[in-house]
Length: 442
Image 1: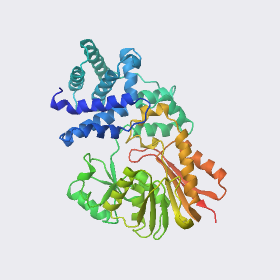
Image 2: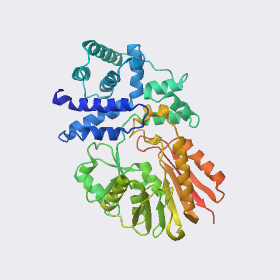
Image 3: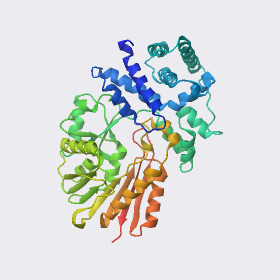
Image 4: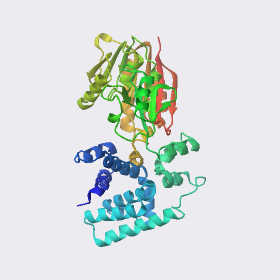
């Protein structure tokens, strides 16, 4: 068995191997991590954090490291076993991305893991040689990358791990400087951002709690209740006031969508895709718990999470209903002042949090998602009062899920007008998001 000090690496390799085996199937790294770590309840917080850093860092650079493998071995990827590919990627990340891990430790630990996995002496020797050559290149001139001026797709693949088809897709809609900025932002893990729950405390009072525990924070622009905790790396449950519901973990872009809807006290609001409750509970806070919000969620496990968050945060103006948003019928022809359709989407704006998306983006198919998004938008708009406001939002940077879909809807829906919309790009402090504010004509 691997030594105790190597348990985080062993578990990280397990997660990466599961991701590799999943192939084109869209799996979430967080789910794979949880599945593996749940079998080791005695693992320390430090080791859990190290395991997570190894997994997420390797996934973030997955396609870059595939280019390295081809360069260093002169072989197609398919000629290496999935296990060796994962061992090499994990070793590369420790050599390149973890300054606290000495090069000899990165290489030796990878070799030891290969031994534990019962690889042949020839394979172990091969692994060791490839990693040592990678070390030499990194300490020298590095790996060759095409110039951005002559080969944009090759540059973004070699430097940031953006698949060629992904780059070509985005180049049709965004100028190159925007792509480079998003790619750069996606290279760093997302710092923790939280929304102070103003139903239970004030921003100033909660900032005081953070200061008392010497937790560094900064305000999020244009979000009075939003705070960024750039140096915090532990579990949010360890922050002051978690159980008391004094805050909610939420990205800045997600908070922005709730404010884009601009809910008012005593309004009747429908949240058609509510779980886990980020925007539902934010809307309630912005309304001061005065009004009525109907939150729709079809899946029992997500419904329970929604209800738990509502209870923890002290939200009193939300009624939860288990139902498919596509088939939801309001009682007695009830119509809503405002409707939020936070539609299921590709999640392409969340690359900082979900780096597994880049390897998966090579086979991204939006057909089924677009069909669902259109159907939810139509259903939400049908439930809106004349003169009412609907906000359609996604955590996507792909126009097919955003502006193009809205334009198509407007072309077929004469009673709908677009008041305004905004596409926010992936940033170092916020995910990429889109929101459109539609008005139903009187």
